[in-house]
Image 1 (cartoon, rainbow, N blue to C red):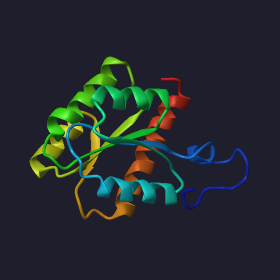
Image 2: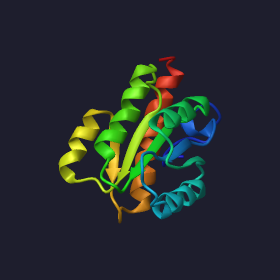
Image 3: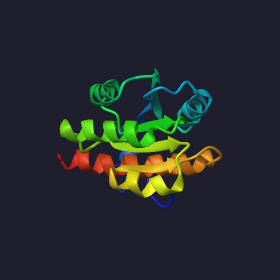
Length: 156
């Protein structure tokens, strides 16, 4: 819960009091480097999130279908092989094709600075690299989850 929020029922309660943030972690495409995403999975669980790990090598279609079927708040994509512009875009495009507006997409991996604004324009935020403090990533995910939960509660 954010600082300064009342604990009185019905007053200023965070949207996260309803249920934990539900996040899908995925390494779509051909990338077998899973140590980082497994570290993140544990950190997210320790931060109170419900974590679903799609495993290695899911297709973008599998990622999107899992995200929808599991009713996640956030999809976190990670690639270290340089295919982020193709694979992340495919996930974002499939979400749009299916009319999904209430699931945030967060990216990470080995992403050149020049590609980050392009990914942001696709709706993929964060785009953190190796060495980013986990607290920074967690704060970003909480912010994005709150944004999409507001959309869900508004019925969009």
